[in-house]
Length: 282
Image (cartoon, rainbow, N blue to C red):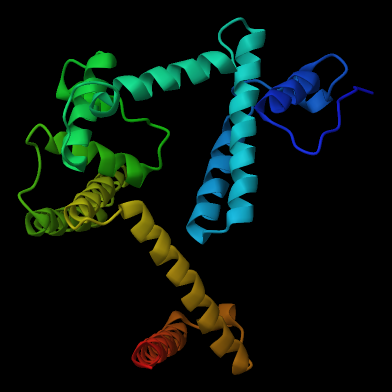
């Protein structure tokens, strides 16, 4: 049994010590076997769970999930320390230095009157400190591990800094139409390789349109997916209420139920809007 002092409240030093003990010869068999690579997906999962807590504005859940993310950071630092690469203190030192360097308007004599100026300075400093000599370098530096929509939107934004961009949302949407036609041609041709390529071009054009509309493509697709789930559930309820089973019905009949569920959604939204309006007037 590993001895550890029981406290009413712990701090970051305690977390580092707990992780060290878990990795020690007397520690946990699972923790001792882990590597940077083996817990990579755990880091992603914890980050997404923290983001969900933020979206819900659930403070107790956010506190818990941020702790899980912090554990991942401390664990990776411990692994690196065991390999004589770096430790938690080095990580803290590097991020502090980065923040000071990239905020010369706060910690230096540079003037930044608004957010646009801050971001411009940030990008210039980032490009210099990372040794990015060309605009192409800034595009290549966007993490490949990002969700595809997020990565595409970020790359489009960086390309725009070099002047490579659509004039406006309308011209970006024109590209969506063109890519849709090319996808249709590929489908007629039947080449899977070309269909994949043209579908990718279509999705990339949709992302550019979203960027010009000031819409986050990742969030838009997430909301659309959630809406589909709720409407699917409504459709299933209507089918079940009629004593039927969804897989037994042809798509034409399911489409009728889908339309009914969609109408119910609209009525519910209208009813909620009327309620909110009445509350504001009262």
